[in-house]
Image 1: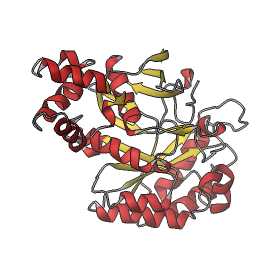
Image 2 (image 1 turned 180 degrees about the vertical axis):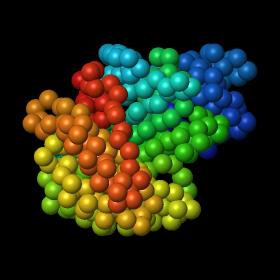
Image 3 (image 1 turned 30 degrees about the vertical axis):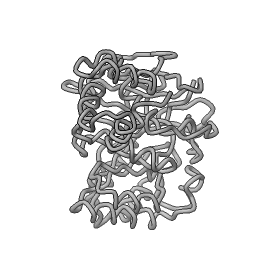
Length: 336
């Protein structure tokens, strides 16, 4: 059977036409699947019985099986089992009014960030758009009230471009999840050509780009899988995204690693890179990963680095990751 969540509205209408059903049924089905979170077609009470049976025979609906669930404080991590028995992780971060869903786009990653657990894996395959969407469905079924979605889980979203864009369109579709684009963040390690392509999609989501170094030499050491694109080329692609969306700032992530990229001269170089560009800089103290020898900087080093950036007029904040105790924080996800 096909994954229902891989269909957009036009594709569902075509399926209905082939089955001699009126197009307006597509809106009803979407409302049940997304706004009412129906986990079976039989629950769609305003559809004819014959249509419900046809849908049941054609599509899978509802959350993915949970292979493991772990919780610490306001953070819950799910290990989900896919149709081919492979697994993928996603995370719920509970907030006061709504929750953030952190979703994955691949099983593994080829960027090979030296400080990332996913980067220690090979990339087994891309996820389909339906598998990406279904992570949010699964988190919702597990009790999440999803109001924000971030592509900060396993994988490089722009190495799975078409599926990610299709999923984003479902997230912002008023007939599906209906989120404001500002509630969706697509995070990339800096795939410059696809940042440029994304700028043309008409999707004014948040864009987050992992820099992690102020020089190309250090960036190649930390993020070898994207070293073909120089920092200046990545920043120019980000400028195209900002220009396409009325000057919208790009969020740059910078994982702070003691003695590697947290010296004050590196802060100064970083400030020069961002000068004059619409930006917000998130400093992320390293979350420890097994088999990696890097260390998290002390509080004093973090404050000094941030202070240097602020003195040079960088819009900067320190982002404290949640879920480190259950390996659910930034850079800690893996399929198992």
